[in-house]
Image 1: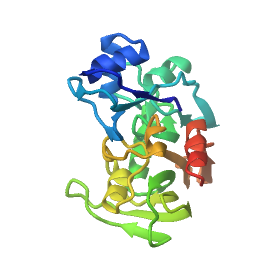
Image 2: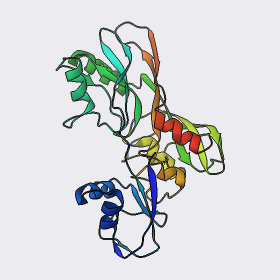
Image 3: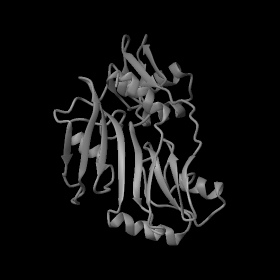
Length: 270
């Protein structure tokens, strides 16, 4: 967490201020704005030309140099389960996790079975060949794979166990939530999902009034100190459990919490 605060001493544009305060080039300052890492007087602002005046408070969450080491949680003849680090795209882009793993294991036939959002960490299944990939696709479509998530969110839910079944993009979406701990301002929640719609947990929690901390897409106005300290949304894919599709035995794998998740949890006094 690298949140820095500055009081503006003269009138200038936001991009000029970010570049000057961070001793950065304009292009790097623009990247910070595009990543929504800047607040002005407690509100997230990302417009380069936003006019600042003397006395304005600018806060910048500078990214930290984080390890992108990929931890192996499980391996057999058919697939890997890895602990995906945050900040890495799963697949379909240059430099994606899938590409890195193909090079790491010298296997061009390796396929990521399911996707996690770029900033989500945790358990991810990787098939060693296309046949295994297709079998897992069927397992997912038949809802034969159980997924458990942990996240930190704003607010204190009235109910300690609740479900949300609002459709997403006109498709059925069902999420179940269990409050593990809370304060008046924040909560630590476990989630299980029956469906796997894009951003399902994040959208359902926003609808419930408890956006995931650090969510730059769905919680743009959250200006709490804890939210500003987040480099990413605080969502972690904790556990996968399923019957091994080739060996008919139960598999349950959990991934350790990332350091940034632990740090924000502590900051929230959870």
